Image 1: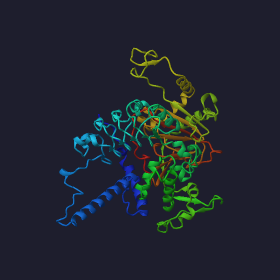
Image 2: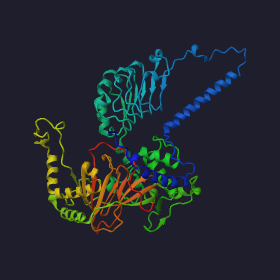
Image 3: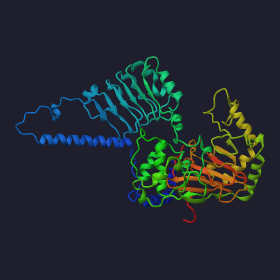
Image 4: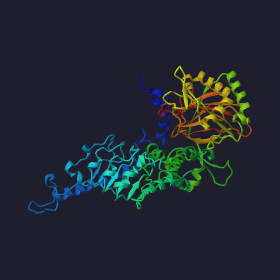
Length: 563
């Protein structure tokens, strides 16, 4: 049986529907972008500039040669390959689309390997460098923007190595990944270890640990780490300490869940801007440029600072006035843009209705859960504090333990081959106790899912039970697949919807009141407004963190009926 189709292949009509709307809006403001622009980054710009300069220099040399007199005696430059006296010391395999490395890829004769002092294989898809030990005089190794989760296994044989640039990979601050023992034992000349923009090497403690792990042999080494907390503390780099503290109506808040790399890419691919240099333009600068693009396309509404809420500066609709900045700079400060209301194109979708009698049973059970300390429904129970909710409780599906996963001595095997867990952790005991108090709620919720999507019901690993959930733009990065949401209670129809970004210029509102709506939480999403102080809104959020990972496709899985 073949692998299941990717989400983008399962729902081509949805993908086409979203792309058609996105393209129509994009070419209105950028007629040349009939398709998204290629993903060009600042490294590409630098590489092309270097190539252009080299080509220009070569042209000058050719012109000089052409102007020589036939009788001139000039032994300064010998271009004949067989007579050359220079030796290549640097090799670049940048942006070659390489997934595997081989010494045969090096554009030099094997006899010259010993003279190589710098190897640059950045911007590829490499995870190993077999044969690296042959380059015994290497002083600089650049492997940035690849897929390395460990430094190359032969790194310890390069005794002349001074600089390792391993930025933008998947390295971790431990010996298995960074090979501390090899570095200390053999690389006495090592001056710089660059692991910036590795997601797992991201704190002051990580940097200190790496430095201490290289002592005492490498006591003067410079360890470069991107301290994400320090970056987020820079003014305007991030707003709100978490999703719970962000106003979901602000476009800045809706974009905040995206990483900076993704936002830089959006500027280039979707708004036709030049790539930004991370060394010059930080996250705050990227956000400023991006919000200004939205403002110029009429998708961000500015408030006059200090005025009443109803006093609004209407978003620009004539981009011709703003081609060179125009008067936009007069009103588009960071503060103005960060407080701009999102006005992206919105599509409205209804989830699948849940039958009334089952809804009523669920609502009765939820009302009993609310304020019941023993069942976890009190306002003191917020198991996910980064989300703005009066109560947030997570129920996990009863564990299914297979013989291969069981730990010897802790479990007993039945005659039928199943395994009985005889020893569990305190955390598991708390989970079991919580489930015992809410088993009826779990069963009712799962029954509703079975009637809507029986396949997903078999792999639903958790259900979040919430009351007063509002706003909180975020991405559920731990999810293995799209999730379902169901909202119940006495709140106004058409409010409290699940909002999800579908593309840079499109947001969908999924109506989940008395309905099960499916969206992909790996896209930024949040709960739309309702009267949270006066109205009653419960929600059940069904998700899966245990199954095989499905690559994200469309953010929604239905097309509005009117379309």
